[in-house]
Length: 145
Image (cartoon, rainbow, N blue to C red; front, side, top):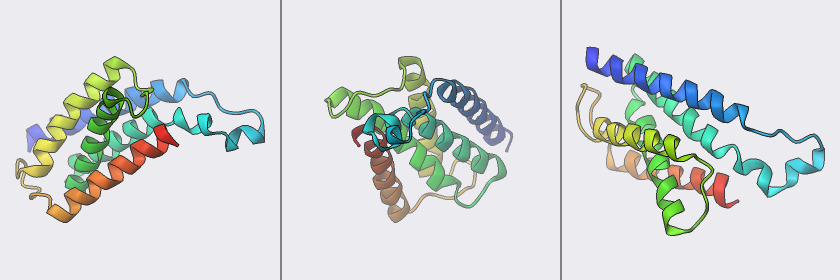
């Protein structure tokens, strides 16, 4: 129980600190027409990953019954971002230090979601597949729109 809460607190601290940083780097449009341009929404991708980590950390902290789905969703999104970047599908806006932090957190999240590490149960195949598809959709929406 103590280890689960420590991991959750670390996830929350990383998510909040990176979320504040990514939010401060967003350039909000001043003209209404800018909201209809593709480049406007690309800058929200790193913030979306931080929010996913925040939700996953909170669910892990309170031992929510959807914690495994949130952890798997964050993990797949965080792992697909550098994968798509390395394969050349798109150029990620997530800085290298944040990518490293997200990948480390994603590995821990995958371990928790796919094992019964803290008595949260194992994630079902359908939920794991759904979180993978949703993670890919989120990455493609914010980066390949």
